[in-house]
Image: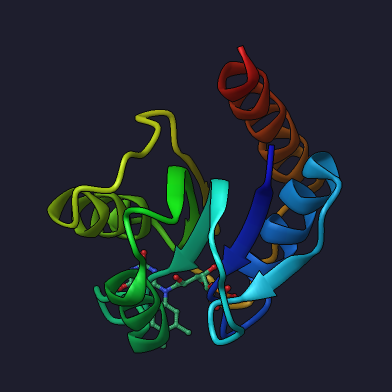
Length: 137
Ligand SMILES: Cc1cc2nc3c(=O)[nH]c(=O)nc-3n(C[C@H](O)[C@H](O)[C@H](O)COP(=O)(O)O)c2cc1C
């Protein structure tokens, strides 16, 4: 089974979560600006800036080929909102790409300087392990 992890991150928070997920999957995490060839299981994450996803992530999703992606597992980080996971799953749905309803979101709170906590990284690890187990079964 081919697993890939791709993320969009301006400040490093989503990258931290992506690297945690990638560690569980035993692969390397890639930025959405890097080439993507396809995957049986794609972990895809992003954040929200001024109520919107970053353009690079929107472009990555627009370019996804439903024939080259089995399932997507969505994660994200934000201050408070669920926009990253909601907007990504909505965009995937519109393209007819399958995704897990079980998403992972780490909320950083109101300070833009907050970083993912050890607990949030642990939660991301458990979430990723659960997704992989479900996908393999
Ligand atoms: C310019 C800017 C705008 C933001 N806008 C929002 C927002 O609209 N809603 C929200 O919940 N969080 C907002 N945040 C918080 C980020 O989504 C949060 O810090 C996230 O973890 C950033 O991810 P990154 O470090 O991977 O770039 C904003 C942060 C910045 C820097």
